Length: 357
Image 1 (cartoon, one colour):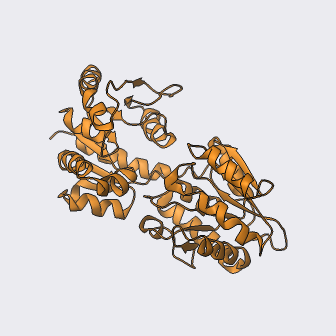
Image 2 (cartoon, one colour):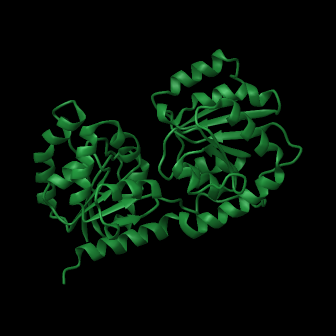
Image 3 (cartoon, one colour):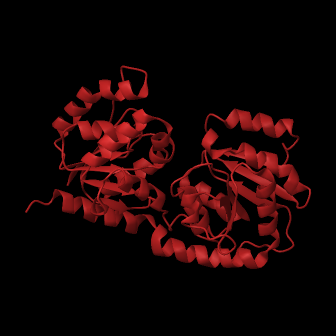
């Protein structure tokens, strides 16, 4: 197949997505307005001439059409409903597969009528819509897309990289300090301020250290806040890590935390589950699709630092829960959270779209 992808070339998730098809021998092209340097497959970076998001995308539509016409794809896959999905739908090339990434439907869609108009226009013109969470599928369905055009595909994890240690759990009884890790990038929606604010409450009861992986516009703010709260010796900022180094950090940790206010299926959560460490995550719909409170992790109310601290202390002290989380989460990842089986299902769906009777 010749597949043209429209999406943010700076995102590892999208590079993995496109890279799978390139590795399978398909001819691919990624067209992006973000950086595409070091992509291990053909990619073209375009520049928006207008600054606003909607007008910028619309102004770049002629250039996108030219790139697609020159490539001659059998199928276009737009990774994002608004923005890239919109220009994919307006390109006129079919079949079109649109991949919802989470914030496009969970944040953008309810925020403004213009976003809702863009999303409905895109979704109702797509031949296939892929989502990675039931909550996203319900939103897509509410726009009038038939269930047979909606497919659940998880970005998933590579179990060759993300896997547990030889030990059957991360309880490490009697060993202190406990290592608490977050691997979310430093953006406001991930609310890492909450973990910093909960840290003193945790430290009143347990010896702990905190590892913050990732980067983003909130990075300098978080470093200043940690210093201002006198927590500099307790927090380590690793910056962005390659997958192997990130997996090693996860295996060294005792507990994973996500303070995100909104999410579809979080690859960061799946990576922690695959690494065998118990998760403490916000009580939001997509997390509930993976975590049953008190069975394979703990859920806490978003923006509640006291509840977050209680959940973390509970997980540290409940070795039985840590053990059950470890076992159950490995089963869940094996059954539905692995990257390659999910992409194989997507490849099959793409072949069906491009097969003519």
